Length: 382
Image 1: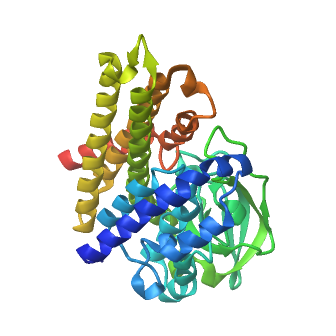
Image 2 (image 1 turned 180 degrees about the vertical axis):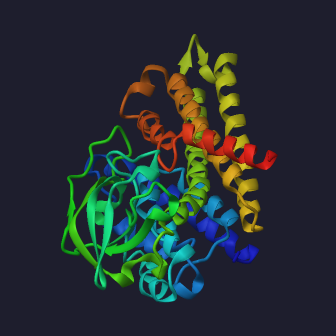
């Protein structure tokens, strides 16, 4: 359900001001501490940023997809760790419940996820199951009125701070989509162990770690939708939506990189004039702007189609693939425009250059997006 135009524009202006005045000035602090400051998280809660996609009846803002990506365009102008702290609640940490949860599960968890008092985490990836999600080995064995979970999940976003895990686990041995179920497992349940936070190339402040389940007993009521076999299908639906969200984040970061590049090019002088006057520098700026504009148009179109109820599997994959590759090109050009300074940690383009590399990998690699797009094209031709 979309907000009325005036209300949404007020929200967008508030978020934009919040990013400029509160988030961007704290970026260095996040890098140094590898954490989002508690006061910033509190402000994000007050703005409703944890509940953008959750229904009003459960305390969220219930934005349409088109509205959500516009908010993410703004959030993307700051270090991605800021968006990440709320991102799982907006997307993969809540949407399995939104899509397939029972009324009781929605009432129990969605209000706390929408307020940010509960952090959700999506536990799909495993040491031997990344792009091949069907290969996951984590098992859930029925034992009376409980299930017993065993297995290891890897690179799980926000796991160190999560209060609720949406865990994909195998309830049947066959390699079929209906062999995988989803369980809502609360942190602190006996049998859950967290690994140390991962040391990553970039995205400091956005924490990930292993989540290990050793004879972890959960009540049968933890089964998403009270239905076995819906986990894989639900995960794919969640990722369809998440891909548009990540694509929008890439556009926001590209906008920031272009702004930084333009400002530096106008200030930096070589051969007696600003480097912004050199045509080859202008060409890099122009290419980055055109790339970003193309990605923005793709995302807004795909989001509008989703809001109309269309199947957006193909266009969401197109948008995620293009936008994540695009922001890599924009970051590379930004470093090139900055020259030697672009390789130095004192400038944000060095940090963003490392941060954006992840977007071509998570929530479906570029190669997986290619397969999805090709598969949808071939299906349509039958």
